[in-house]
Amino acid sequence: MKTKTKVSKAMEQPKPFTPGVSKGMVREHAFRLYRDKLSVRPLTLEDWVLAEKDLVATTEMEAVEG
Image 1 (tube, rainbow, N blue to C red):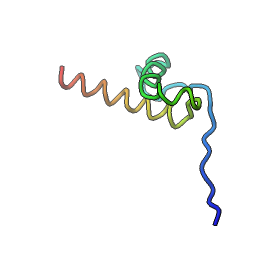
Image 2: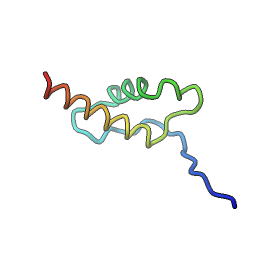
Image 3: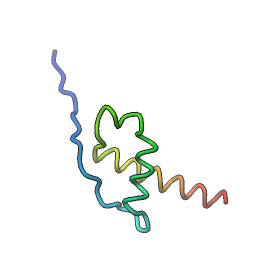
Image 4: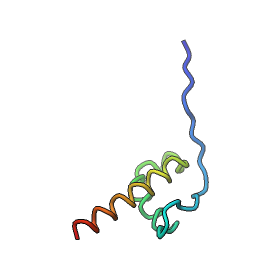
């Protein structure tokens, strides 16, 4: 039986959803998170969103701990 696999399309970096977060901040964080994948495939919308969410969570945790 054949199953369809989800193919994610590469895309340009979207504008961040979080106020106070710039594209550059998300781009740097995404690079750190996905550095090993970048030679295999470009980033998808899901990658950008996850990188932004992780960046915001990390920044909030640092503020609480700091």
